[in-house]
Image (cartoon, rainbow over the protein chains, first blue to last red):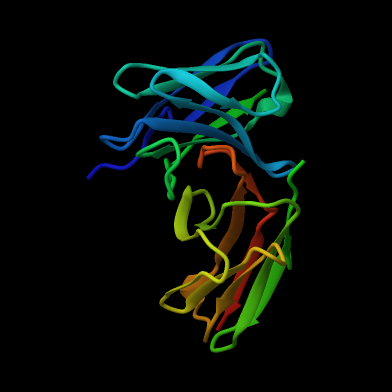
Length: 113
Length: 113
């Protein structure tokens, strides 16, 4: 079956702009979580959604937001982009909220100039 | 605050040799994950360890978990070049969700011919 799909795969923005990233989980998976990966900070948890509700949030400023739709697809938005937001943004899905395995997408690589 | 430490950060080993990657974490956890990441790629799930004493093996990789020592190991047996990648351990807290993971810094493994 199809894996976790993230779009776009690559994008370049300038400081001050905003960006929206999309994630389609594996069919039947209801939990979607987002992670930021940078060389300096490593992999950091952003937020998690289950049944259209945010269940957990990491330590990121309010410029980072997300949502989940009724079909479990999720989007995350970063407003007023800063250079430090350049990163690989990874989406992961799992079947239930408290299950054993997360499946990650290929990621969206954001470059902020 | 949960902290996850991996060592070594970088490992260069010859084909055919054995080695172990260590993952220490600071607070009680109900599950531990190992992931593999190839350059520019996403995270591939290797193992999910759910209980003290759990041991899982797949090919040349074997992972174990000691919850009392808050330690997991990833043992590589008779390394081959295809195992070259970055390996991450990740821990989830007993928060009722499996998706909020705290990742280690990663171990970059380079297997030389």
